[in-house]
Length: 336
Picture: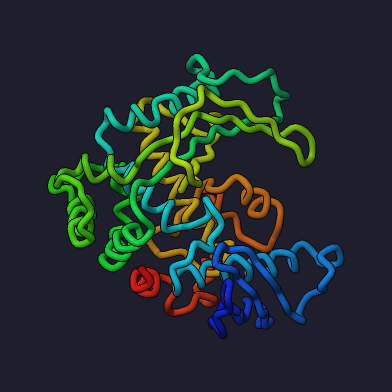
């Protein structure tokens, strides 16, 4: 992918993108992330005449154009719940939450997953489903940092290679809390009002979590939804949403859940980059289920490799299509 902002209009930007096929696209991206126009000559203009692969080339280009404007100009143009920076920040915070705070946030999520594996009473009741229907367990996560603060934290994590620590932090303890120390220093640099303890940093990053939500397929295009008791939540979009299957995970305790949850969110970060047609940062080039909507693409089409499968042999992370500034936060930070 290669992009350039060609002009700024009264309500957004005109972005030129060359996709991974070398096709040139002119994409209008509004300040709120809506696509106001999309011109290209490499694929049929009528979506009904495109192949599945051609649909995905077009969709990749739109995702990348939105991401490019977000990183370069700081506008909220990336679709909610698809921002890899926010999801990585949520994973980082979860990896470092004190055990009692982690249980307060995710204890019901854990219980529901245990129920789906046949090992606990349900938090949310669902009707008897066909054996082929696998309900997924979700819970929205709301971050308590401004977007510019999130960018500053993640820029530090990427610069010194500690996104890898996000994946590993739940697996092993660090005597000096190295990851948290770096987060704390960034928080101090940004003059965010928090105490200088690891607990306060992580608890401050996660402001709230939503109710446990169960979703399952009901026909080709419909879904059913059931939720636990509603909560009072911030009046904005959540920044991350785990989507896990009780039958696919085995949890002996809450710390096992923490490990799986951190890794699952990092797989979502991976998916954000892969489905924009570029490589994820090396620290999150990991395998396993991420976004539910991407599982079908990975498992049923040759367009992508089986990134969702921990046992698959991955030979292409799309490095050859990744621009040099793909992991550069400078435009985002400077726009604050």
